[in-house]
Length: 112
Image (cartoon, rainbow, N blue to C red; front, side):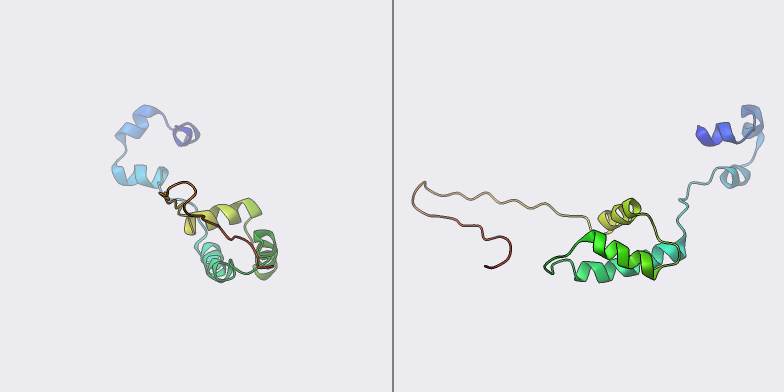
């Protein structure tokens, strides 16, 4: 509807147009700058390899990306595209055990 209102055409005029003209007026594709986007995707491949290293932060890697590229995305767009490319898969597991018979310990974080 926003595109229709911004087009300055009347409804009857649009009905008289052929499909090719309508597709030209109302494009359905996104406006992603392919060169800029491909640079970001290449950078994400490097970032994803370093993700499991201690002290990893997205802010640090965004600052590096910002200095390497001529037209960088904003931080929020950087994170949005990263999350779309590398979506997290949430896993869970049910442990069935008798109370007091076994102890399960979950070791997380750095080794002391």
